[in-house]
Length: 230
Length: 123
Image 1 (cartoon, rainbow over the protein chains, first blue to last red):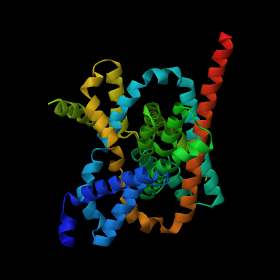
Image 2 (image 1 turned 30 degrees about the horizontal axis):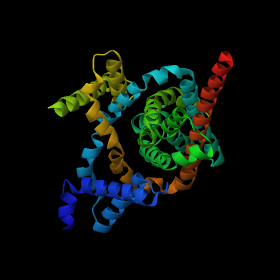
Image 3 (image 1 turned 30 degrees about the vertical axis):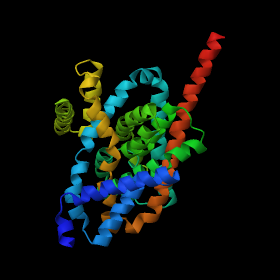
Image 4 (image 1 turned 135 degrees about the vertical axis):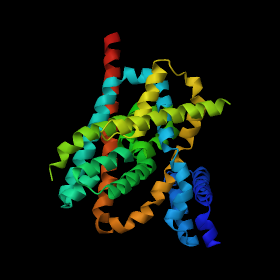
């Protein structure tokens, strides 16, 4: 059985989907914001793999076909952006300043924590691109002398965390404007956060999608300036 | 037939994004080139929204599950994270909250001060 599961092409996808459905069900049933479907599915899949003794690489052999769709899905975020193009034009200034200050806040706060924890240059630049989309973040980390594997792990953790806490944080800080919410989520937690923003509404989703691209590009420009600080 | 064409267009744009990434030597992923290209051709009217809409909405809806495999991969990263997990988790949690708060508050401040501004103009 264990060898069969390890070599099944569909097992990985099926447990991922079941995990997500369980997450959706629990969230609907108990209406608690900490019951995050993405987190629940991750925990569920990890549990299944450990319990059934299936190695991650074998799981990934099947599950990679879901990840394959990530690029086309990101491309499709342009559709929601296109539908909000008028709103985007009307609030150009707020959007640019909002994302810009978010990117600076991200770089600056990572710098301050690096000082606090006496991180080495390598550890510091590994964390520097933590809020942006994986594909850009890992290249920045590599170029600045970081460890890109750890950067990828931190970026995913940031995304899942952002997905979980975004709604609550917006509430605590009285962020009520849909545009502001969307930009905040996308700038802090890239595409994984954006899936949350999509749930909140069309404007939130579009603004979060926009932030993935803009925050990513701004970080490409600004991260090297911060890298020299430690 | 509709879905084949829609999926074909989306994958075609992804492919062009991949091509751009290969030709242009900067750290921009295929998906971002594709997103900008898709927005551009929609804006220019080369592509009609109806030609991709249903498939695009489907892909966006199932997007969360596409992150599960990579996130489960954190299991494998434990070995390299072991030494620095504490500063890393603290930094991740707090900076994420800071970025949400700063981006959201500043954007909201600008939007609302402009709204007040236009009210003042009218009155």
